[in-house]
Structure formats: C-alpha cells, structure tokens
Image (cartoon, rainbow, N blue to C red):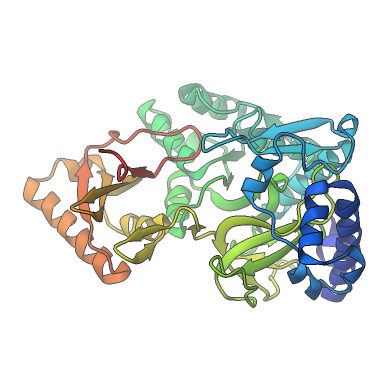
Length: 434
C-alpha cells in the first residue's frame, strides 16, 4: 500500500528532473537569503546559475552541525522570523543547541512524510499508535504525532517516562503500533513481564523504532519477544525530524529515503569525496523543500550506503542500508576502527546474554582499553562461576577473531545496567579522567 502513489513510484528520470528543479531553486534561495551560505559560495567561487545538473551538487559547500551552533539561534533561517511557526532544538549537551525552524508549510510537509512513512510500514487509519517518543524540543514525539493524525490513525501521546503506566495503557487501549527507541521497547517488555502481563494479551502488530542505531540481531530479539514486525525509521532534527526514511513492510531491507524532498550522497568521511552507490560512507543530505531552514549538503555523520536496486514494494526512491553507527561514535582501539553495533551483533548472537550492555573506555599505561559489560539472563546468572567465565572467555576470543581487538568482558547481574527512556547510553569514556 502507498500513501502518495504518483510520487512514490515516479520513474527515476522524472524524479531526478524534479530534484534538479528543486535544487536550483534552493541554491538561489539560500544564496540571496542566508548570509552564511552566500559567504560559503563566494569562498568557493560558485554562483547559483552554475548548478546545471545533479552532478554539480559536489561543487556546493558542506554544512556541519558546528555551522548551526555558530549561527545560533536563528542565523540560518531563510525566511523572516514572523514566518516561522515552530522551533525545535537539540539538548546542547556538547555545546550550544542546534536550532531548527519550521514554516507552516514545513510542518505540513513533515506530517505528510510521516504519514507516508507509516503507510510504508503497514499502518492504516484504523490503527492505535502508542507514541513513546519524547515530546518537546526533541522532534521525535511531535513528528510521529502529526504524522499519525495526518494519516487519520488514533495516537496515544504518552511521551517518555512512566514505563509501568505505559504498559498498562498499551494493554487497556489496545494499541496496535509502538513507536519508541529500540532499547526502550526492550525496557517496556521487561516491565510488562515484571508486572505479570501476558505479552500475547497485547494487540501490538507493528513496531517503528529509531533515534539510535540498532542491529538486525536486536530486531529479531524484539520481534520474537513482542510477536510484531519491527521496522527501522530514520530522521534527524537538523533535516526535519522522523520521517526522512523508513523500511517498508514488504522487505524490511533498507530504508526508503523520500527523494522528492531529500537529495542524498555518500562521502568518504575523511576526504569528503563522493562515493558511488553501494560503497559505505557518511550520509550527506540536502533538503529540497524545507522553507524556514534549508540545508545544503548536511553532513549527518551517520554511516551507511545507498541501495540503488529497485524494491519489491514498487517504490522507486533509493534505499539506504541500516545505519552502522556514527563516524563520531566510532571507537579507535589501538589503531582498529570499531562501531558499537559490531560488538552488539556478537553479544546478541551469544545465548544467555541480554541486549543491555555498556562499552567502557579506559587508558592503562598510555594505551586505550575496552571493557564490555553485558547483562546475563536469570538462567545463566544462576550457573556456576566457571560457566560464566567460559562465556566471558568465548566472547573475548570471538571479538578478537572478528573485529581484531583485545577486550575485557564482564558479565553482570540482570537489571544492573541503567535503562534509558530515550536513547541508550552505550559508551562510557573514562580515558580523560585522572
């Protein structure tokens, strides 16, 4: 089933013609309305009229998160402030917040793309959507909310927190769709079991999970526990919010990027060189229809690749692979590059371990070390110490064989690693502590 049949199945040549038309309009708009971009263009000695094909995109400047911080709060707006009807912002935990503005048309576009994403996931207007993404300056909650209403589905705006009550509401309201981070869904499952709630008594059939990288192994774990179809959704506040891309229910293999609104590239994160489809690198997005705060070649830091092969669902928009992580989350352990998702995949393939873990980085005698703490389930925890030690030794050996790094592995008691109501905190970096 499709939400916007004509646009979602547009032939590639027509789609690319539309992208070029929108790109040319965008470039002219930011050149004349955003001083930051006008200066960038001048530095590169390029003018809007020089963008004649989509291949010319590579001549345009990159935009980075620091550029948003440097222009805090409204320096990248391309419209008068009185035309901005909403503002979202990041938490600013690593510096100034990144602020994003929306016109009324931007809000309508966002709602439409989220509705389109819901339909791709198999959601209909008859569904009841339990929305456990946070509301407020974070874009997740309101993005899902407006999309659900645009589709005509029933939305339960429960937001984050109150986990025990959330489980009760899912059961009492007969929710059929769960929207939250994948790690929080597992916390909801734990809480339901602890409350004696039979998971089979829930009406859930679809889970739409995002806001953090997760592995195929975690997907299978969630699907098995809830007996649902779990789909990955992608978005980021700087670009729009949730609804930039999503897996379809037909294949669950790659996320459809809505290319009538977003122009994508994959680049080498070190050199900035554009990579061909199929190669893995950093995802770069240009917003083609954003009014209040359009961005050119925004470096997301998310690592993925483009799937140019047509999907069985009939949509012609390119897909991207499930995110492997972020270039700025990549761990470098004694010269070896490792993503947390690679470690997660090994942990979840090991019988007796739970999806709850933390990676603790320390420095010993000027060398970086990595300790992996992972919870075991109740059954394994009751085993003899020798059995637990065998599991630890096996994990150390497997990680060394597959990833090429030496680690310490520590199995910990069930429910000892802190649960998150939003994005899970996987990495604890103690290297700069004395």
